Image 1 (cartoon, one colour):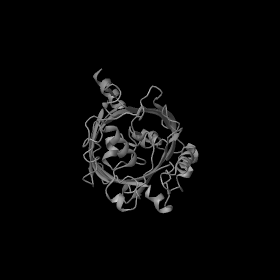
Image 2 (image 1 turned 90 degrees about the vertical axis):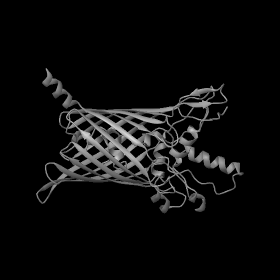
Image 3 (image 1 turned 60 degrees about the horizontal axis):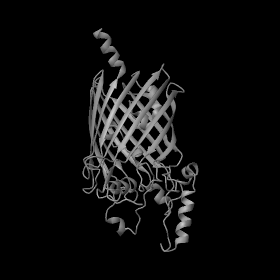
Image 4 (image 1 turned 90 degrees about the horizontal axis):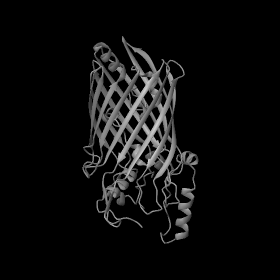
Length: 393
């Protein structure tokens, strides 16, 4: 028994998060709009305000608490011994008022060369009214919990491995036979940070690579088709210039691509049920590992469309006295693959014990529901807390 949702939040979420934001131009371009579809799309939402203020960048930026999402291999380069942070993102606020993402992340460095890290993220779609199930209200949600280990292999290079459990209770069939989806995944990441002299200034250049969500497909009870989770390749670089002991400026860039096969377009009449069934069966029979390799050369329109699947971001960060931070950035996704294009701004304030960050999205399209999205992060430096309480004693 399928459900009918008077509150249209699930429909909006499925369309906007999986397919991106479309415009009328898609029809004018002979149905060129062809995004890569995945399940558990909340895993692709940037959780923290620092990266959110820089256009969703984080593969190679300076290490912080939220490196768990962007590149866990950065943790051994963190100055602090340990830290924890909580982030909150109201999502699609121009459409609804109770969709949100909450994230809790922490790390602990072991000696000078390795670190343990963990995070918990919870995505809620709020209350959804079910008109054909005795008028009940349900609360669809997704969450993921992970743990990682990172280690420096040299003074300038590190690697990390992260294991993740994924639970998704967002489905379209709430019969007695249905159940939530579960999956397991892993991340493999690396990071290199080097220093060089530019005149009298010691500058730094870093690059990072993170292949995230390599794992099983996810199946919801009552459905025999296993969906791909958002396996993703992210590559980034960061360049930091200290002007003096109080002022420094960083420029960063990220590119990322979903390592998920593109669903093939049907070139025959939709009434050809045998053809449709065969296309669907072949797609769903692809294994997760085979899908990673297939994703580089399976776009219906060849190499041109493959390049359209690459998203990129540019961002910058100005820091004064390691206390006050201003950020800006831009994120670009091709109009045929989602059309999420937006500018971001952000600011932060750091003390020895805690830090506060906020970010804001300015969409380039007036009809883009990502417009005016905000993120908030509150972080704690456990070294600073230890020193503070030690002095009080």
